Length: 124
Image (cartoon, rainbow, N blue to C red):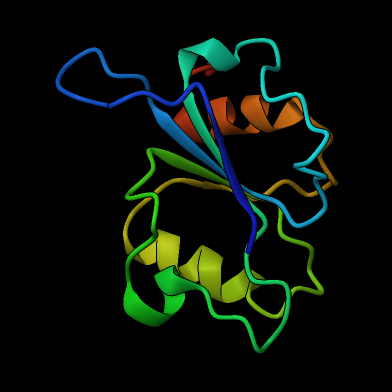
């Protein structure tokens, strides 16, 4: 399981930036520019999730994510990933908003999905 962070700083007290966890097993985190437009408003963690049935997800197995409890999860694990549904269910059980796009995302569209899940861009 690969994990990368950007805009990371200690989140304390009021005025902290929302933590966005992006779960995507298709992003190449080695070459990814971790500063898409709008990203400075968030703490962003990218996790590739478990990539096989043999690799375990700590959230599903132990109830705790190594990155803590995010404010929103953009769940873009591929449907073929054996952990995809269990990870989404675990976040929802913890009452964390989960954005599960119906079409594949390209970076930086993940940020837009996070905003929609948090209701920040509701103009209705």
